[in-house]
Structures are given as structure tokens and as C-alpha cells.
Length: 297
Ligand SMILES: [Zn+2]
Image (tube, rainbow, N blue to C red; front, side, top):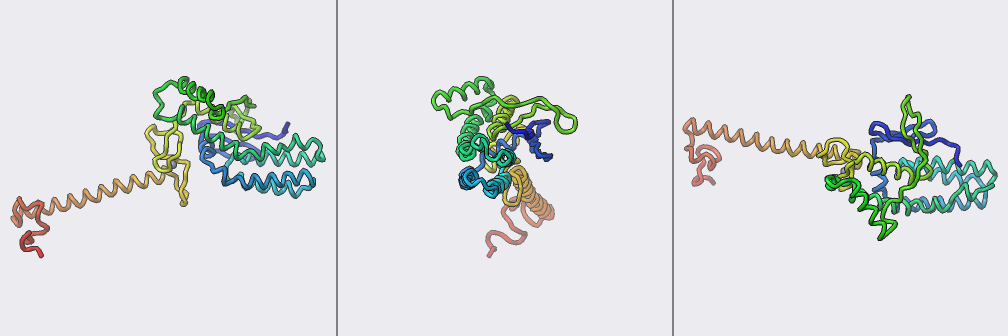
């Protein structure tokens, strides 16, 4: 239906979002991990307000209501790059409704779809988490991929919403960036990004591990024994990996300091024995020559 071009593809370990002559790149699968832990209930009021504006727009046919929605979507786009698509898509929908003078507005403006985004993402978060725990967790590495996937999809028999519902995607092998070619996703919803990213994680057999600092899953793409993620940041903007490195450096530095003091004391006492100032038996007991247990105050 849409006539815009929004591309999403993964190339050389990076995911690219290309739209409106703009391009955003991240290490893959950073945005899948971000959506997994995004607090959707914090954002829900914004969706409620957009729903209200959308209803007003449809009733009053005034552009100012559309403008309200667009500015909220722009705000949302700061929270996660997937919302960048939502903003792009809905801006086109609203403009198209105006161009068509509100003819076919119910198809152009699927209100329910927009309103249900927080609860849809919340459901997908649980499905992704289950997929990570059952299939991609590094501790499950030894089991064959097929077996683990079987186990995951088996659980749908008990509760159909517990597993991710993979669907056909609109993809094309085409030219991207500077003369490269890749399988490109032309998304129609936020779910498409998640679908494409999840199957890519499975195809690539990317292992997931719980970060020692923030307790969230991260993709083990570099060193196999890395314990910290590079996704979560603290107030100062430092990633868990950077915080972990500082902690490690401080603890080794600490041990070094203690060892230095020990060496210094050891050498000093050894010199006292050599000079005959203390007896060898007093090596560990005395604080300094002439101060014995008896005459110490
Ligand atoms: Zn972390």
C-alpha cells in the first residue's frame, strides 16, 4: 500500500535502518535486545494520547490533530529505533489521508493497530525471552539447534501465545549502501524487525548470556568468555563492559598494592635480621626493632 522506501538489513555484523535519505547503524542484534527490555507500560500513556488525537483527526478532519500524533511519534523514536519506522509509516498514512480527503481513512489509519502496540510488544518480549532461555542461552550450547527449537515450539501446544509467531516477510536481495548487496527487509510493522532479527539470531546460532552487571541478556559475538554487555549504560553513559573493565582494573591494582606493601615489609625485616637488629624468630612478630611484646605500650 505504501509508496515509501524503508530498508532494514544486516551486513558485516551491523544492522542498518535506511529511510528518508537517513541511515542509522548499530551492532547486531543490539535493537532486538533493547526492545526486549523496553518498559512498554511507561510508554503506554503516550499511545493512549495518540489514540485520542487520532479519533479527533478522523472526526474533525483537522491537520492539527495529525500534528499532535507526529510529534509524539517523534518523541517515541528517541526511545527505540523501531519507533522511527512507526513515525515514518504513520506520517505517510496521515498525509495520505489528507491527500485523499479522508476517503478510505479506516484502511489508511488502523487505529486498533496503533493502540495495541504496547501490549503487542509486551507479549513479544515474553516470547523472545522464552526463545533466549530455551534456544540461544550459551548454557544450552551443547544441545543441537533443531532439538532446542522443537522444544520451544512444542510449548505452543499448551499456550499458543507463549512462542513467537514467525510470519512471511517482505524481503528482497538488493543493492544497499556503496555498491553492496544484502537481503533487505521492507517492514510493514514493528513485529517485522523482531521477526527478521530473531530468525537471523537462530540462523547464525548467536549465543546469549546474562550480563554480570545488569542481569540482562546480551549476544556473545566477540570473546566467548565475555561476561559484560555493551548495551546497558549507567547515568554517566558507561556500558557494563566499560564498568566491568574498571572494576577488574581496580581489583588487580588493589592486589598489586597489597603485594607491594608485603614485599617492602619483607625486605625491611630481612635486612634487620641481617644487621642483627632482630632475631629470626621475631620476623613476623615485631613491628620495629626495640619494640617487643613486653615493652609495647
Ligand atoms: Zn549489562
